[in-house]
Amino acid sequence: MLTTLITTLLITFSSFFQTVVENDATIAYQQGKKQEKNASTTAHYQKAFELYQKAAYLGYDSAQVALAQFYELGIGTKVDFLKAADLYQRALEQGNAQAAFRLGNLYEKGNGVEQNMKQAAHCYLQAWGGKYPRAGKALERIDAKRWLPSDLPTYRFYLAINDDSNAQYELGKMYLDTKLGKKSNWIKAKYWLEKAAKHNLVDAQLLLAKIYQEGKITEKNLSLTISYYNQAAKQNNKEALAWIKYNHPQEDFENMRLTASSKKTNTKNQIVVINHFEEGVKEWNNKNNEVAYTHFQKVSSKKEPQVLKYLAIMHKDNLIPTANLSQAIVYLNDYIKMYEEEAEGYRLLGEIYLAKKQKLEAKYYFEKTEQKGGKVKKEVWASIN
Image 1 (cartoon, rainbow, N blue to C red):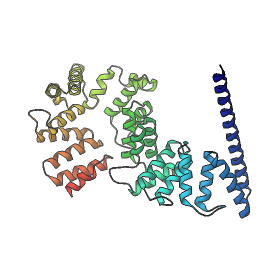
Image 2 (image 1 turned 180 degrees about the horizontal axis):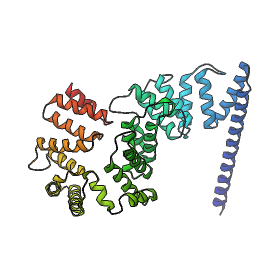
Image 3 (image 1 turned 30 degrees about the vertical axis):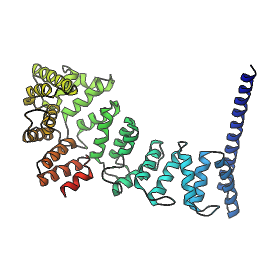
Image 4 (image 1 turned 90 degrees about the vertical axis):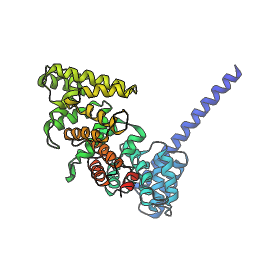
């Protein structure tokens, strides 16, 4: 009984003390802001510095940012980038987006810390995820100047760290933005919107469907339009369901997903394609490669893109007894004719030609891969040059 009472009193006192500290920090910070706003002399700024210092010491993140800026700019004190970086880091750890942005700026310039573009990008991405308005431009600046190693493209950090489909979607839209005289970057926008769509984000699926339907940013593609509307419809999106009902009332959703690009009209043939494709994928996932290959092979003449890609990979990676690199090339050439903007087909062709020691051809397809927004590792380029 006595132990319980003591524990309760300690918890109550701790909570009370925490509240007092937080109140003191808030008051000191607000006084500092007021002092800074009305400052006209060095003494005024020094007073603001002292108030920020008090609030920062009590753990108030906004005060830590304000104090760090004073150290960074030499306001009310001497310039000290090292102290600024430490304060930004402490505020960042509390989720302060402005602190993340300012620390990223220090890493980018090498002020108070060793210049590190990778770390700068990490910080900017945290700021961008926290909706800090200037972070997007900072990321674009780093990406445009290619300051990072080629195997660490700036924006992929956010995906790697969080795998956030909403962030992928917003990034895709950012690359489509034509405000302030900017040109739309369709290749990068497509890359990120497709990532979000694969995570079943309806907004991304609808946006891609409309882009391919309108044909303003890239060429019109009815097959992909149907495919993306179908993906959204499978999640009971009303807009997608209405579009399909009006434009393709007789189509089966799963049928459209698998055979959209084949331009089939014979429903029976479509069902055959679907059945063999699904069975092939099932056996592939179970590592029954030869059985999977048999299913894919039976419908290879239908030129369904995903079937062609699976067949090519099985030949390329020697997963079947009859594996043949030349046959993989045939399948992939058919694949990229249908998916000209898809980087993966070009990458796979590059790897095949590299294996065949045909470096000029490999270089051509790897260059195409990067033009389409794909990624080629540094060691691959080193083996070619």
